[in-house]
Length: 277
Image 1: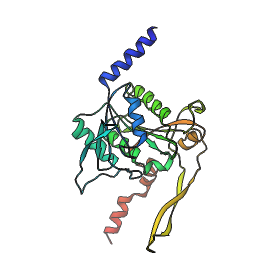
Image 2: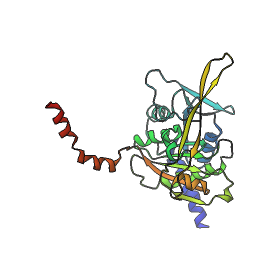
Image 3: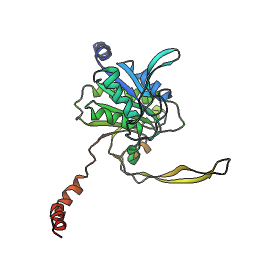
């Protein structure tokens, strides 16, 4: 009995004190963000700031040459959040600086329609929204459902809620975010939650040449995923084995092994040598 009283009190305190900013790249009208907000509202004060239109695979782009506009967006005739005619990173930046006017306790991006694992992380707008939060020293989670067709986001929402409750009591290193991928299988088929590393699987992309009705050429991106990851501690392999994959990532892109190796190149000596010619 005391246990349940404690849990109820804990969730109440979270609801009072924890502020979560939610964004995505599928757009404010996507079913995934609605499921995420529905789950998180049980434990926190949630503010939605998401792209007005779909921004999938825009990476970490930000808008610099045109003005951004903020629209109060309603869903089912009730206020749902703020729609921004910009990128996912724009949404988090303007959400923190202009809408909330203070840093939230947590930023969660998703629930994305489709996997964001391995090399695909580089392109992901979902991950970039969470990464923008990490740049601002705000703990963040990017969460994806690994299917482009399934709209059953209930379990992924449950995972987001569990991780959010846990993360507010953890000291996640500054600049780090959690990239989470939830297999699109029934909950009773989930093998567990696996801490993972970013895999090396990547897309073999081509641009297929086509013609429009006027006979003009255009090109459409298509490709096949080249799966090379087999270790269960990599995100792609974990997903394939029905594990929820949780990968801590950060925005430091330095290759430290190459950095140490290149010290032997003595680049400054090469520069001086060339200058003497």
